[in-house]
Length: 189
Image: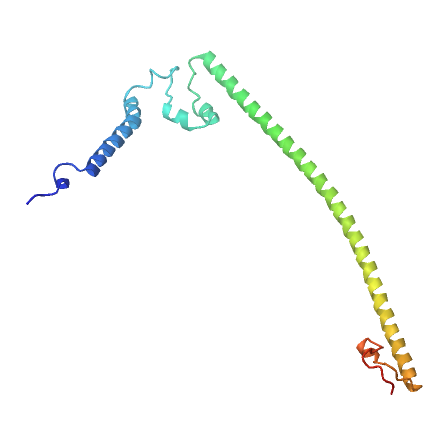
Protein backbone atom coordinates (compact mmCIF):
# COMPACT_ATOMS: atom_id res chain seq x y z
CA UNK A 1 0.00 0.00 0.00
CA UNK A 2 1.41 3.32 -1.02
CA UNK A 3 1.27 6.37 1.22
CA UNK A 4 0.46 9.81 -0.16
CA UNK A 5 3.46 12.01 -0.84
CA UNK A 6 2.51 14.53 1.84
CA UNK A 7 3.54 12.10 4.62
CA UNK A 8 7.13 11.76 3.37
CA UNK A 9 9.53 14.58 4.12
CA UNK A 10 8.52 18.21 4.60
CA UNK A 11 5.35 19.47 3.07
CA UNK A 12 5.11 22.85 1.43
CA UNK A 13 3.29 24.36 4.45
CA UNK A 14 5.84 22.91 6.90
CA UNK A 15 8.78 24.28 4.94
CA UNK A 16 7.14 27.69 4.82
CA UNK A 17 6.67 27.64 8.60
CA UNK A 18 10.31 26.71 9.20
CA UNK A 19 11.53 29.50 6.93
CA UNK A 20 9.22 31.99 8.62
CA UNK A 21 10.39 31.00 12.12
CA UNK A 22 14.05 31.29 11.07
CA UNK A 23 13.40 34.70 9.53
CA UNK A 24 11.68 35.98 12.69
CA UNK A 25 14.51 34.68 14.89
CA UNK A 26 17.10 36.34 12.66
CA UNK A 27 15.14 39.62 12.65
CA UNK A 28 14.77 39.66 16.45
CA UNK A 29 18.48 38.89 16.84
CA UNK A 30 19.36 41.67 14.43
CA UNK A 31 17.32 44.23 16.38
CA UNK A 32 18.07 43.15 19.95
CA UNK A 33 21.62 41.84 19.47
CA UNK A 34 23.55 45.13 19.14
CA UNK A 35 21.87 46.49 22.25
CA UNK A 36 22.88 43.43 24.26
CA UNK A 37 26.49 43.56 23.06
CA UNK A 38 26.85 47.30 23.72
CA UNK A 39 25.69 46.88 27.33
CA UNK A 40 28.61 44.58 27.97
CA UNK A 41 31.20 47.10 26.76
CA UNK A 42 32.21 50.10 28.85
CA UNK A 43 30.42 53.44 28.50
CA UNK A 44 33.64 55.39 29.00
CA UNK A 45 34.69 54.99 25.38
CA UNK A 46 31.47 56.45 24.02
CA UNK A 47 31.06 59.30 26.54
CA UNK A 48 32.94 62.50 25.72
CA UNK A 49 33.21 63.60 29.34
CA UNK A 50 34.62 62.04 32.51
CA UNK A 51 31.36 61.23 34.26
CA UNK A 52 28.87 58.48 35.03
CA UNK A 53 26.39 59.18 32.23
CA UNK A 54 24.02 56.41 31.20
CA UNK A 55 23.33 56.37 27.47
CA UNK A 56 20.05 54.49 27.88
CA UNK A 57 18.42 57.36 29.74
CA UNK A 58 19.74 60.02 27.38
CA UNK A 59 17.36 58.93 24.63
CA UNK A 60 14.32 58.43 26.84
CA UNK A 61 14.14 61.67 28.86
CA UNK A 62 13.47 65.25 27.72
CA UNK A 63 16.32 67.74 27.42
CA UNK A 64 15.42 69.65 30.61
CA UNK A 65 15.47 66.48 32.67
CA UNK A 66 18.82 65.39 31.26
CA UNK A 67 20.38 68.80 31.91
CA UNK A 68 19.10 68.81 35.50
CA UNK A 69 19.75 65.11 36.18
CA UNK A 70 23.43 65.03 35.33
CA UNK A 71 25.05 68.00 37.02
CA UNK A 72 28.33 66.08 37.30
CA UNK A 73 28.65 65.66 33.54
CA UNK A 74 31.24 68.18 32.38
CA UNK A 75 32.15 69.12 35.94
CA UNK A 76 35.82 68.53 35.36
CA UNK A 77 35.81 70.44 32.09
CA UNK A 78 34.91 74.12 32.80
CA UNK A 79 34.24 74.98 29.15
CA UNK A 80 31.81 72.07 28.81
CA UNK A 81 29.96 72.99 32.03
CA UNK A 82 29.68 76.64 30.97
CA UNK A 83 28.41 75.66 27.52
CA UNK A 84 25.80 73.32 29.00
CA UNK A 85 24.56 76.07 31.32
CA UNK A 86 24.30 78.49 28.38
CA UNK A 87 22.41 75.94 26.33
CA UNK A 88 20.00 75.21 29.17
CA UNK A 89 19.37 78.91 29.80
CA UNK A 90 18.92 79.58 26.09
CA UNK A 91 16.54 76.66 25.71
CA UNK A 92 14.47 77.73 28.70
CA UNK A 93 14.34 81.37 27.59
CA UNK A 94 13.36 80.30 24.05
CA UNK A 95 10.65 78.05 25.47
CA UNK A 96 9.29 80.86 27.66
CA UNK A 97 9.34 83.26 24.71
CA UNK A 98 7.51 80.74 22.54
CA UNK A 99 4.90 80.16 25.23
CA UNK A 100 4.39 83.92 25.58
CA UNK A 101 3.88 84.31 21.82
CA UNK A 102 1.42 81.43 21.75
CA UNK A 103 -0.44 82.86 24.75
CA UNK A 104 -0.61 86.31 23.10
CA UNK A 105 -1.90 84.82 19.84
CA UNK A 106 -4.55 82.82 21.67
CA UNK A 107 -5.57 85.86 23.70
CA UNK A 108 -5.88 87.93 20.52
CA UNK A 109 -7.92 85.20 18.83
CA UNK A 110 -10.17 85.00 21.89
CA UNK A 111 -10.66 88.77 21.89
CA UNK A 112 -11.51 88.76 18.18
CA UNK A 113 -13.93 85.88 18.71
CA UNK A 114 -15.59 87.73 21.60
CA UNK A 115 -15.95 90.91 19.51
CA UNK A 116 -17.41 88.92 16.63
CA UNK A 117 -19.78 87.13 19.00
CA UNK A 118 -20.96 90.44 20.50
CA UNK A 119 -21.53 91.92 17.05
CA UNK A 120 -23.41 88.86 15.84
CA UNK A 121 -25.43 88.75 19.05
CA UNK A 122 -26.47 92.39 18.70
CA UNK A 123 -27.46 91.79 15.06
CA UNK A 124 -29.58 88.80 16.08
CA UNK A 125 -31.19 90.80 18.89
CA UNK A 126 -32.05 93.60 16.45
CA UNK A 127 -33.55 91.11 14.00
CA UNK A 128 -35.48 89.46 16.83
CA UNK A 129 -36.90 92.83 17.89
CA UNK A 130 -37.94 93.56 14.30
CA UNK A 131 -39.53 90.14 14.02
CA UNK A 132 -41.40 90.63 17.31
CA UNK A 133 -42.68 94.04 16.16
CA UNK A 134 -43.87 92.61 12.83
CA UNK A 135 -45.48 89.65 14.57
CA UNK A 136 -47.29 91.97 16.96
CA UNK A 137 -48.49 94.14 14.06
CA UNK A 138 -49.74 91.06 12.17
CA UNK A 139 -51.47 89.75 15.28
CA UNK A 140 -53.21 93.09 15.83
CA UNK A 141 -54.31 93.15 12.18
CA UNK A 142 -55.64 89.60 12.44
CA UNK A 143 -57.59 90.48 15.60
CA UNK A 144 -59.06 93.57 13.90
CA UNK A 145 -60.03 91.50 10.85
CA UNK A 146 -61.69 88.85 13.04
CA UNK A 147 -63.58 91.52 14.98
CA UNK A 148 -64.69 93.13 11.70
CA UNK A 149 -65.83 89.73 10.38
CA UNK A 150 -67.85 89.07 13.55
CA UNK A 151 -69.47 92.50 13.25
CA UNK A 152 -70.17 91.90 9.55
CA UNK A 153 -71.82 88.54 10.32
CA UNK A 154 -73.94 90.12 13.03
CA UNK A 155 -75.00 92.88 10.65
CA UNK A 156 -75.79 90.35 7.91
CA UNK A 157 -77.81 88.21 10.31
CA UNK A 158 -79.71 91.29 11.50
CA UNK A 159 -80.54 92.34 7.91
CA UNK A 160 -81.66 88.80 7.02
CA UNK A 161 -83.86 88.65 10.11
CA UNK A 162 -85.38 92.01 9.25
CA UNK A 163 -85.97 90.90 5.63
CA UNK A 164 -87.67 87.73 6.86
CA UNK A 165 -89.87 89.74 9.20
CA UNK A 166 -90.90 91.94 6.28
CA UNK A 167 -91.84 88.87 4.22
CA UNK A 168 -88.94 88.58 1.81
CA UNK A 169 -88.24 84.86 1.12
CA UNK A 170 -86.54 84.82 -2.27
CA UNK A 171 -83.41 82.59 -2.52
CA UNK A 172 -82.33 83.00 1.09
CA UNK A 173 -80.04 80.70 2.96
CA UNK A 174 -79.22 81.83 6.44
CA UNK A 175 -75.82 83.34 7.30
CA UNK A 176 -74.89 80.21 9.24
CA UNK A 177 -74.15 78.48 5.91
CA UNK A 178 -72.08 81.49 4.69
CA UNK A 179 -74.22 81.84 1.54
CA UNK A 180 -77.15 84.12 0.88
CA UNK A 181 -78.24 83.05 -2.61
CA UNK A 182 -79.07 79.51 -3.69
CA UNK A 183 -78.96 79.33 -7.51
CA UNK A 184 -80.67 75.90 -7.71
CA UNK A 185 -83.77 77.03 -5.85
CA UNK A 186 -85.38 79.82 -7.95
CA UNK A 187 -89.04 79.43 -6.90
CA UNK A 188 -90.86 81.99 -4.73
CA UNK A 189 -92.60 81.02 -1.59
